[in-house]
Length: 355
Image (cartoon, rainbow, N blue to C red; front, side, top):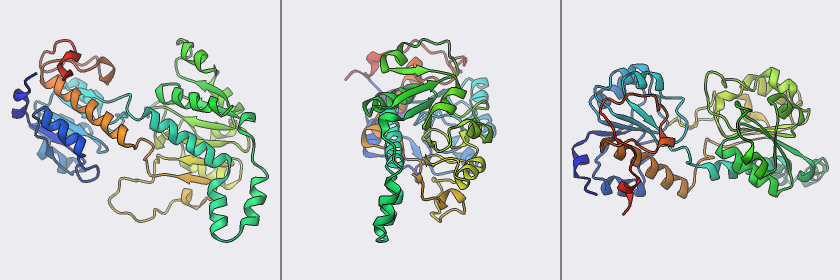
């Protein structure tokens, strides 16, 4: 396949400082004759001058609100180098005929591994014991370990049952956990659940019966603060919450309250509503979540691995290459399939990418 036609396209790669272009990503750009302009811009006023006349736009963590998208003159595609698109005004993009794409299979394995790492650390009280050992207080660690529960006696509840949740279920079953799950469309096929030994139940049942509740949902108007004080009240006393999805799924004020009063035994959190791990200023935030020794925190890195970075670069770049070559991308990578593209597109052609 000759990719020379792509060398004349104006392509913008945002988040160039926060997420520098990797060697693998660079090699893909070269392979497809793309010459992206690498930009670090965070506000609409900073972004718009760079993107107003672009043909394609790559984004990772930056917000692309309505005002930015309205100023895209002939952009054909916004390619999210990741999965979630809650920071992109997809509705406005659709109205302008701009495809929004993502890489939905990106980091499924990594997110599942991270979820299980949280679960195991919380179950065995590793953060508390590590801190106690470093202070020479190992007798306190021994006392804490006396309340540990055997995992095969415990229940894991998954809220959402997409790819990452199913990968968690597979791992959890290997540890002997009973796994419950719920999803918005409970009438959907239960084939995957049956194959994995997962029982599909209501949201209320997941909350009330699980020792560990793990979130696997996108952030939408419907899921914003899904786990609020009302939801926490339905959880078992002494349960744990794990969130590797989107921070705003959880009402963090309510979470702090149930941690302070001891109703929850702990939490594992990788994504936040108030704390911004993408800030260039690394000053400890004034946030009560940082004060609990039974809470394990990581800076939105559940997706990270060498392999995941390669997957997302390849998937995101091939989305753009398809569209700029007048083809639809993979159907599963299209966030707004109802869009009427500004230029006509023919069917996706996987053969384009065969070496």
